[in-house]
Length: 152
Image (cartoon, rainbow, N blue to C red; front, side, top):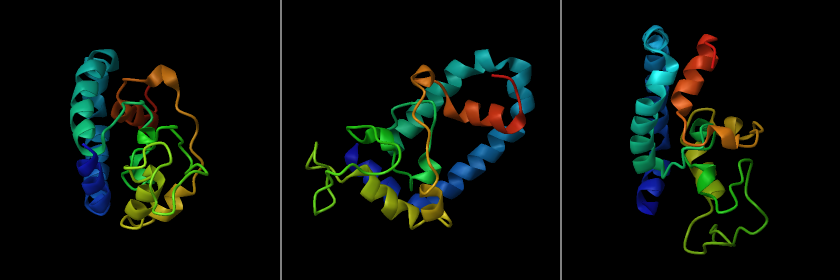
């Protein structure tokens, strides 16, 4: 799984374009999601999201995805789950102090962000703490509801 995460960071530019296209498609389908009912769509959408994002990013399904602003490196893979940058324990070689065989997710985030237009600027945006109540829910549907003004 770790090697696929690293592949995703190396291909962050292409994955960001695909991610933005998927978001646009899901927003265009908002009338369908409303007609079916967000509650009914939540479980199957979360399953699809878990499958794809789990494969590509080792997604933890936090419900508040920030891959687009972290160079396609999921901060929830950090053993300390830091969402706004590295801890003080990043080793000289860029690896994690807790799991020395793993590159710090924030070092990877910086590398991936360099491959996305405006990616470094997006990393500078302060991320709110993960809302644990959203764990396991679809962040894709949450984004659609936020961007279309639909009720949660």
